Length: 190
Image (cartoon, rainbow, N blue to C red; front, top):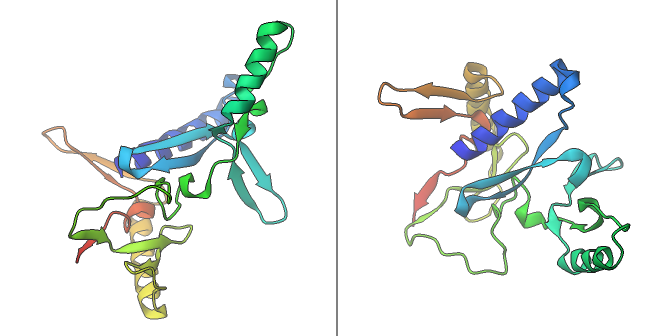
């Protein structure tokens, strides 16, 4: 959770700097990918790697590398040094399972995922605000439970705001609270 909170804070700070210091020429960044197992997220430049679909209002990402295309372009450059290419020329669409916020959490569904025998995610799908929509079996939550969880989220946002809160203890340990992540990582024992 702290890696996501850090990335979100960095994204917000870059946006603030971009808006308040135009001379810095800081590009817009977005949370493109995550891989929960390696505790990593990818902040990608929107102008280079994001594609916005005006009809759906959704953003897709092109953060993967088409290695065949890269090889082809690099061979062409080796033969003709006046030929140039950029990352946009060999970027490939990011698979849905690798996108930030996907239910697969960056795990390729064709790979075998090993979980601790007794621990399973309490919730498997979330809405855009981070409120769970499906239980540990993948079944849609009932209306009453969704209302309860939405209310808990609103309370957390009311006390913390939309950003995240970082509290440091005397021993140097940091506690990071981010309402959008409050239901992720909860487990049940089976």
